[in-house]
Image (cartoon, rainbow, N blue to C red):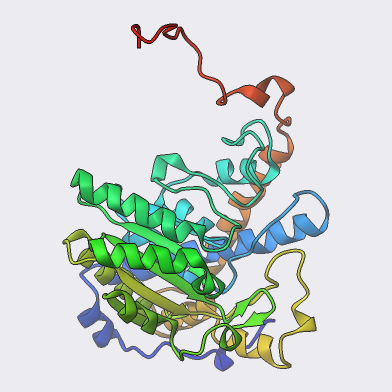
Length: 352
């Protein structure tokens, strides 16, 4: 759904109010954030086309989640850890994971770090402390709690970000993870991207509370609902919550209200269950268009900047796809690599 710029809901800031909210250099922060969001939109568009053509097996688009994901990548420090859900590939890329490497993963070729063993669109990026995505609903919540517990025991000074959708708040792992984190005051920020649909199930049919963030109070820590289509508010909410966690003030639950702008996955048909007008409503809250309009209206970018950045993104994505398609699949000999250890081992209890 493409909407005219004048129908996009504007971000509610003037230049002076943003200068008060953000640190020095905020103009470059917004430009950088927008460039990453553009890359994410180009990547989603291209990979969904390839999936329909049968050139990749599966792809979970992050369209509509770009503000949350880019802000999440920008606020992290090197010592922090990220446990994603299904739509946080941009967090890894912003943190420094290579775009070509990510695309090699999508093609499951011989340069895929997982050698084709992970489900496509479920990357692991060890070099930026980014744990494999999970299609099992909610498991990353309790895993993130465990990582944060280790961080606290080791006095590492970092924090953990856990991303999940509104559907995961109905899982056992959500309760177990948040309860443990609250009891032990762990340095973890739980990030619920509430796109209002757990596949075909609307959020009001899975929870009686008006705000999923309010569930944090049952576990003894702060919860806050945030407009996840507003890059500025999203960035500030994540920055503040991470600083609280790193400072020893315990966990937080952030509920980012976003709009799912694409099918749940390439196997889904939302026309069978979403109400009429949903896509129009979602397009008006498009996080990419909202930030673009603000930057253009306030003279921080030009239409020429925007066109050049989009062209660069398209070129980078195209080059990564070309390289992946020219790469051979993993050989049969790699099947047992990283499975069995090599070397000599003790043969008796005494030698152990």
